[in-house]
Amino acid sequence: MRVRLLKIIYHCYGGAHSSVIAAALHLKWIEKHRLPTLEEMMAIPYYDKTDNGDFGSIRFMGIDESGNEVYVLGKKGMGEKYTHILMGVAKIMGREDDLIAVDCLNRVNWSMKLGGFLSRRMGLIFPGRPVLVRGTRKAFLTLVNLVETVRLKSLRGSGV
Amino acid sequence: MKIIFLGHNPIQAALIAAHIYLDKLPSLEQPESLEKLPYRDLLLGPLYIGSDSKGNQVYTLGGGKDLWMVKRSIEDLRNILSFAAGDLLVESVSTRGDRILGWLSKVPPFLGGRHLNLLARQILWRFQHRVLEELVARVKPG
Image: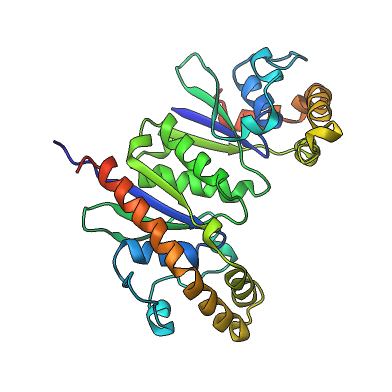
């Protein structure tokens, strides 16, 4: 059986927090069985490092062990609609089966929203980042759950 | 080639632009197939409108407030899926009328939102196409 390599896009509000953590989990850059430390999170590319000019840009994160390419994207508050847009465009190009778009915004808690707003929008690294990191750790297990679902879907989708 | 007219919603300025491109205008009537569809059902992906004489397929797409952001994502996606710029063209289309429709779409159905929306669509359709011909000329060769 021919193995199909997928493009997996995790998207959230700014493409800087929940989608980046999800991508890092997918790529096994952080362990899923324990909460990541501040240093581990800050070592992930793009984590709390994007600005307004990055909205809409699909940024490459890495390749997983199956050869699938993993990306992140910030789409403001557009929610699940962005999944429909991306999948719809892939469909008209005849490549719907090669793409998985994953909305991470619904896994974001208020601490992440507040911390992300202060840190990215207002430029207040302190107190924004500590609040954000606390929120990320609180949301970590739901993100693990989301990524595990996507990894199973990618295995089925790639024909493995 | 696929051509996507990207509007705030897929059924006003973008739809008129697509019709101008396909030489289906002047017409003051909305296409029957789209007239009765609930607004929210139209926001889920590209809508196929028709093909031109060269076989280019024309679509409309609703991108919400930030069209530049959606356009950028689609162009990035095109590159990620290894298509050339000539395989997929995205053109943003925006008029004030689309914003009005967007606001009306937020009126809940029990307050008459659906009827207001359908009425606004019919009224706006009659005026918007005049301002879009110049834009379509950018996409349409010759």
